Image (cartoon, rainbow, N blue to C red; front, side, top):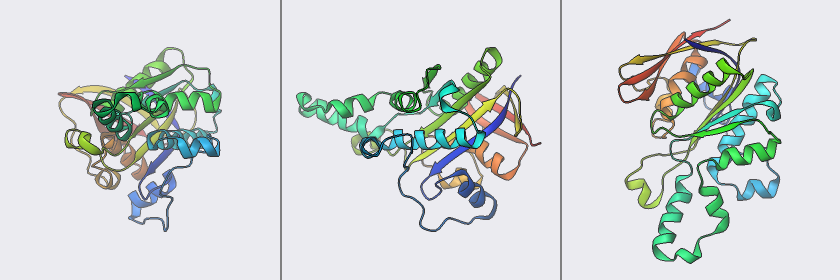
Length: 257
């Protein structure tokens, strides 16, 4: 069995711009008034913030929030960035432009189209020289990212940053790849210390769809399979189950100190 302490949490979705707002909504149904409509990660300079795509903005916003919550230096943490599709808006632009006028591809949009774009921005912005991993496994993406982070903790890392995020599908891609809204969440996982204690084990069988407030609110986003864990953390629940692949699930036991 793999285990870790959750030392810090970051969260952002449409209408819920931080973990405090998400917990308030999950436990009482209240929404913040006039919430921010776009993440604005302070890790990026203002001009970079304006140019960066939504996928990078939300990933960096929650990653930095989790590090602050854990009182950890971002430059000292290995990281795992998990996204089902990367930036679907840019991918739709790339496909459409390649089919119509391939020489008109924007170099800026091209470098933001790669799946590890957010991880690249993160390591440059934070000055982090530790290992970073970009992972995609369709609906099992977050569970597989969590397993990767837990394995790193079990081998040589003292703490690991895990980030899950996805964006809205647009254009022709939206007819084959469904995802709506902007959603990101991050955990700083540590071997020891204060915070909820997480234990994980693989289980044969499918995980049920999330039925908590956060899961229902963002169920159309491709990263929604991670939300049973965040609903459980918000409610102080002692277990959660995540989709980990066809016929496989990741069972999580949570001990709240």
